[in-house]
Length: 82
Image (cartoon, rainbow, N blue to C red; front, side, top):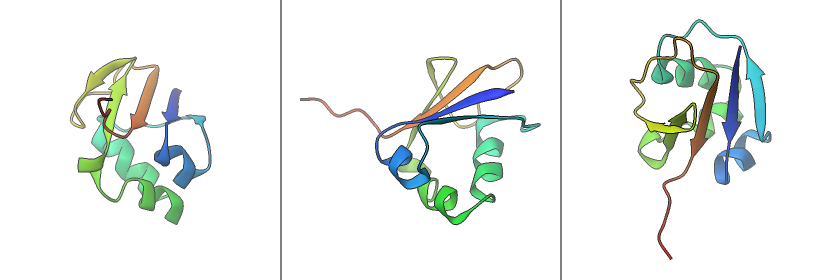
């Protein structure tokens, strides 16, 4: 089981702050494909991956990061300075 967390507009589009899912996806990208296929709201949230960042077990990662042994994946927009 993996905890999937959604932040900012990703959370607004999906309608959940987090969920626990069971997946056999080998990478973050495969997880995104799996989630996008669920419902239109997921597809909308993941439509433009260049507008998203991902963290795996609270470390910034790429979409090709492996999920073996991972407990948490978080999706969020890029941070902006202020």
